[in-house]
Image 1 (cartoon, chains in turn brown, yellow):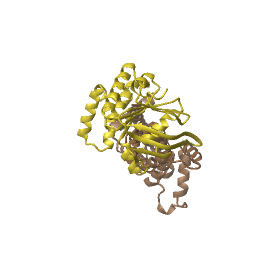
Image 2 (cartoon, each protein chain N blue to C red):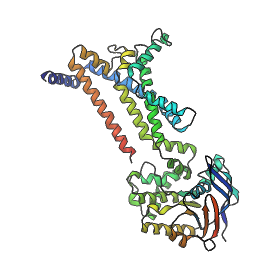
Image 3 (tube, each protein chain N blue to C red):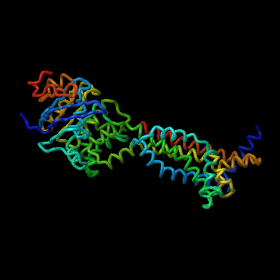
Amino acid sequence: MEYIISGLQSALMLIINLDPEVTKVVTTSLKLSLTSTLLAALFGTPLGILFSKIDFKGKFVFNTVLNTLLSLPTVVLGLFVYSIISRRGLLGEWGLLFTMKGIIIGQVLLILPIVMALVRNAIHDIDEKMYKTAISMGATGTQQFRLLLSEARYGIIGALITGFGRVIGEVGISMMLGGNIKGYTRTITTAIAMETNKGRFSFGLALGIILLFIAFLINFIIYFYQIGESR
Amino acid sequence: MKNVILEARKIKKSFDQDQVLNLDIVKVYEAAFNFLLGPNGSGKTTLLNILSMVDTDYQGEVFYRGQLMGKQEGEILEFRRRFSVIWQNPYLFKGTVKANIGLPLKFRKSSPDIIEEKVKKMADKLDISHLLAKRSGELSGGERQKVSIARALITEPEVLFIDEPNTSLDYESSRYFNGLFSELVADGVTVLLITHDLYQIQNLADYITVLNDGKVVNQGTSEQVDF
């Protein structure tokens, strides 16, 4: 017990004193997660809207595949991207392995299905009466689309926050594609795994507390948006 | 006999393989209470959707003051903006009551000052000023219907389509809105109303169209039609 308490005390001191190593790892993680989420939003939001609105042959199969990808293990995806960007892979010449870009590719692929599926659901959940009402009020096609986005805004933002939450906490992709290089591709999760193994328990604990705080913040924001949605 | 403002000819409408409307002719008279009656599933709401141009996917022709209502995007909007619809179960958009009521004017690109002024005036008229700052999710069923009525009237429509408006209103509110709709008709607004309310039919109806199984089974003035 004493071991945990003293570890916790040291961890808190590391956070309060803004330890440079801790700060570097946290900013790297945030940079990676925000960039990945932004890129996934850029592609995933329009695709989610599109797949919710259009009907095509095989949509059921597509939706099933999309839903399956929601629970894709990060190490499996890491392995898949590794095989493409490693030296012998299709994009080996681009030198993406063990870089920030490499991690971002993996993370975008990880959360793209999440963003697409949740945006699809948010659009799909909108009552048919919404369209009928907007039409009867004399809305143009563009105005109807804006209204659709506005009505689904809490769901769309919720999808992006969920995506962010998934990438900030993942370890498989960051480890396999980033290589856990100190000061460069070392993220909160890869640092926790390695430093704890090395016996730096308080350092791992400090990062764990920060990660928990971020998770709490994400859930708090999601809760806020869910309240907004019900009104 | 009043002037015909809307006339539907040879209207056919199907959902999948199921034909729900097959009408020869239906007339809506100007500045009058036009009632659309019939049992559930007789095609009343489908016809209302077609006449109000909410649904343009049908066979046949609809004329507005003798002019064919085209189905091209620009034409549709031109006619649609002369009408308003009050739905049985109104949909209110997320946000405040004030924003909801002003939305049709925003679609017509009215200035924020004009929207503000008209919304306030309409809310005063319908005695819902106390609801303006509330969010739509906080309203009761009756309040939602009142807000949807305010939203429909704010554009001063030439034709007002109403689909069973009284289902979520209490007795007092129903009577109040019957009076309000009568005032609108007296001011020259055309009202087409779907209802099962005998009081409304007996006291308000000028013209009645009775549908059954997607066909017109009776049509004429309230004196001529046996409902």
